[in-house]
Length: 201
Ligand SMILES: Cc1cc2nc3c(=O)[nH]c(=O)nc-3n(C[C@H](O)[C@H](O)[C@H](O)COP(=O)(O)O)c2cc1C
Image (cartoon, rainbow, N blue to C red; front, side):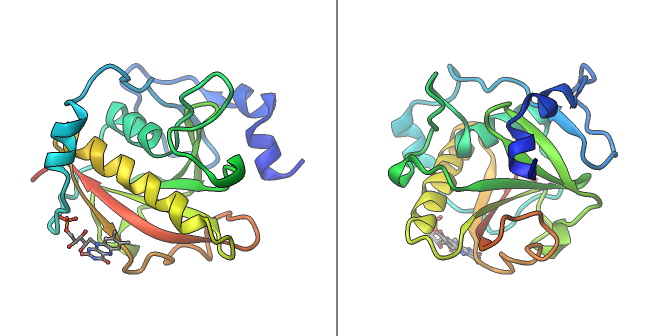
């Protein structure tokens, strides 16, 4: 069974860690943590979010809390229908993207079916990028002409969520592939761009 088959299997669900009430992150590698359910009724009206959307070039270094992380990852690549389709459209519904969350306590892969994260790298890797509180990595097949479009949909959703929540964010193409040699990316996949997110200082 390959890694991706495992992640979508019952074995992965069985491995989901029982969460502490405060959804604290623990240190073990390969740990899977179920995220708090996204708040699908909250937030500012869409037109207000569009009016507020902007990049912040000075970002805080504090970790982003778990409920916010759950909302951010769901905004990027969550499943929003019973048929397993996502908040963003994908060409031919191929769904070939992966989102990683780079936090102080490791690098976590988002598992949309489970709305969970799986630790794929240990240690604080945020300084491989800009050191912001949270760095999202958007990866997809390098040679697929649709990949950059899919990634753009994800960072725009996250940018609008940030506008709604009052989070700072910036999409960045600097050092975007800094962790690709270490990440468990499928063959031929790469990180296309990153998005740094933090609560205002
Ligand atoms: C694909 C892409 C790559 C970007 N790369 C960087 C970057 O490497 N560094 C940076 O500071 N900002 C980067 N930005 C942010 C732009 O500088 C910013 O979007 C632009 O100045 C417009 O500002 P606004 O987002 O506030 O409208 C990037 C934005 C996009 C969409």
